[in-house]
Amino acid sequence: MREDHKPHEIMTLSEAAKFIRVSEKTLGERARRGRIPSQKVGREWRFLRHALEEWLSGRLEANGKPRLAEGVAMSKATHVREPEVQYEIPFAGFRDTAFTENRDRSLHRWVPWIAGFSASFVDGVLDKVAARTPGRLTVLDPFAGVGTTLIEALKRGHDAIGFEINPYAALACKAKVGAAGYDVRELKDKVRDFQAHMAGESKTNSRSPAGFASRVPFFSAVVELQVLLALDFIQAQDKTWIRDLFRVAIGSVMVSFSNYSYEPSLGTRAAAGKPNIEEADVAHAVVEKLDEFIEDISFFQGATARFDPKPTAQVYHGSFFDLVEKVADGSVDALITSPPYLNNYHYIRNTRPQMFWLGMADVPSDLKEMERKSFGQFWQTVRSGPRVELTPDIEALSELIKQLRKRNPEKGAYGGAGWANYAASYFNDCERFCRTALKVMKPGGIAVVVIGNNILQGIEFPTDRFFSEIAEKSGFEVVALHEVRSKRTGNSILNSSVRSGTVRQRTKLYETAVELRAPALIPARA
Picture 1 (tube, helix red, strand yellow):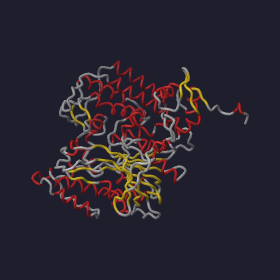
Picture 2 (picture 1 turned 180 degrees about the vertical axis):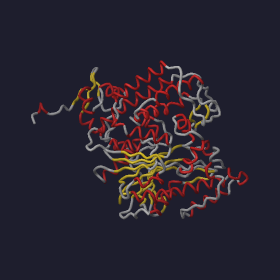
Picture 3 (picture 1 turned 180 degrees about the horizontal axis):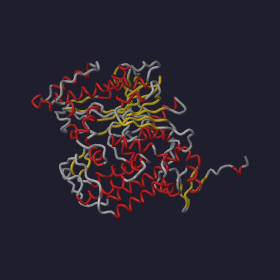
């Protein structure tokens, strides 16, 4: 090929936008925010073709640095339990799990989610798996949340499967993974229609959910009318994907103009020392969120256009235990997930507003089945029931639960006995999860499970170490335990009502990525 016929290495804004299949406006905005490899020359932007290719593949950060080059060097490993398991400090490829990083990332920023982990953490795991298993992977997240694992898998051309029991999170996850097939022009038209509807209507056909109870009015009367008008518009849409995107948009911002806030659990603004919100521009908040959606959908379509055939994603609303038959035995190359922690953070109750106002629940009893089927259940679900016996045969864990059961006996189910039931239920589900997950893994497949230690009634549970031992007894090989995040220290969290008890020493709460490998031969599903 003659030199002057070769593709230009340096590209203009127009050329680069066509190359990655987004609008010039979207690309220019990303360049201004430093969210894509670029350089401003005078008043114009310039882009390197190879840098865009590397960025689209996930191997390059927006600042032009290779992602794997940012990791901290691997420390000297220390043993958790002789001789099988190694405990390692973070190394290149396993990154900080904090979800806060996702606030500025395409698609991930749609819904704030305290239970999520960072996209860059998933990237690091996929880098490691892909280095061993080149080609298209099947990636599973049994606790998919709002879809971080699935989105990162799709961006790399891998097929993805997710399960999520929370209907609001499942809605957001489905809306995200379908982004490659949306009509951006039609969505823009619907946003304009929504603005006109909100500006012109003053009477609503919708009603506030009768089964939703709160200690103070969730919305002021002025704000509630605007929310109901928005719901009128959503219900009138005939295309499911349009309705879903609008529902996710209003769900993601509704607490911001309510009389409640996350601290991190859902509570009244007054209890947090904040004034109630009497007036708010609901339409503006929803449109601003939808504008983010439009920008991110355009980006995602560009990022996935290079794959032929297109990667696929399946999101199942329900418990992984109940729906595991949806996954073929021996089909999963990589499992990347973070199950609920042993901290009684009530994911179901903290999304009550979204579930009731978006029509996912009618009465409080609708939530009970979800609570009962949630991983580990909740303290409130099992505290007053019959004694729950621990099924994993781990002596150290059994001893801790015995100690816990003896704490604060005068409080009955609210003392150690209730919390011991919760802890036993949680670790029983850990065992059930490991045995279930093993059967869908390919021989030699990698599973990475992010989990943290916890404090109950003043007793520390090194949950990550117990989980790794349960996994090993279930048939996995434990490769290593990587400490990926030191979350917080001190007594404020340790002496909370959930963890109440005498803490005699400063205790660090941390998160660990437990790296597991499926054996060469995996037993068939029973």
